[in-house]
Length: 272
Length: 309
Image (cartoon, chains in turn yellow, orange):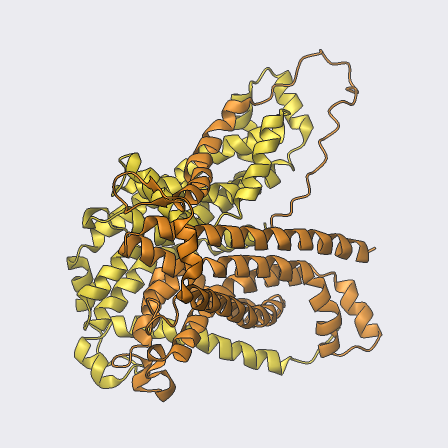
């Protein structure tokens, strides 16, 4: 079937490209200019001379510390999520007890819980556990609120593993733990990668839990640090833009090297 | 969204075809499930119950919450500002839906095409997905600044955050910019799954491009429209970050939504009990709406499956 080019759709897509592109262009362009040049040349002008002094400013205001905190929160959230969710998904698919069936239904219902509406009791619980103002305080609820969707996706992929494979391993004398390590995990590698990416992105980009559960600059994560940069760099807009750009840089790099995964993670999560 | 048809358990009762030792199949016990249950129960389940209890207490954030009965609720419903805040919340939710849905469908269907330039362009379209909400909100906060932002070059943007209509428009633009790529992704995946025969049949019938979009593509996307709308609506009702960082509820209280009001009451005003009452309203409304849509979408799913036959 030969069709003529769809000019209207093409035009719309170019318009959307401009809408997506301008803020990103502005972010990059401002962050590489001096404050004077940025004020003189107008918001959309191409930078006359490129400077890295904003980069130095951002680094000097504790960026590395916040980066390390964010990396810790992200890595721990992903590790803990997988550690807890993989056995759970395995039990839901393979266990015949009423408990696993009921829990699965509860997890599914749990997807409807809006995290925003639970921040007050969460603040109370974290305080009572003496965890306020620690990275652990951020990690624990992040993992908990991610679990329902992660388990759902893992269960979906595990249902495709045929019963014969489990039976074969049982005949070989494998217990549940060995089956999990040697069969379940290798068979759901794709799903694990997708939920891992999804959890990592969520942990990296989250704002609300760090906002209410930490206070001290030594526990600050990158997203939260942007608000303090904003106050610090009130008039230094290029510095602010550099900070915004740097927080997203690791994710951009991931996008370049593992775009397929990242998109699969995001899309698989959305369509559930 | 959360419609999962429970797959029928594989017929384990069937007699094994080969003569096999009557060895019991090893199955994971409840210990495998326990860590997940404890985690979820403690940090997601318990807060849900606790928020209802806290709404019946007086608590400043330190010390022990004191039970005061329905006082917070009486106060909540007698507060005139509540209706204004609820109105802003619903208005924003409606505007988010009405702007994002048509654009995401159009872009998603477009991006589903096999042409090379579409693949390249859609890689660029998804860039906003990579930025955190905080980064996006603060980026736009600067872009919309009257002294340093785009307003220096474009008059319409000059005071956009200074008027209530402008601030609402700004929020709709920013949230759309952030989330349209995600919903586009959903529609792109769904549009790729539409059977090609349907288009071939439509071509035979002499349908033009517009007819195909209206009578083939859109009906086939119905399930995705429901999924995407649920995510959008439930998400919008409890949406917090962008508004907090972009307008901080202003100018005045023009963009103060229920989640924002809850946050300010609790963490700025130290009225945690009263804020919990607002949070409870949010929980009830969001859960109610998603249950309604799930019920409704389960129905729609069944119908569209039958239609294919």
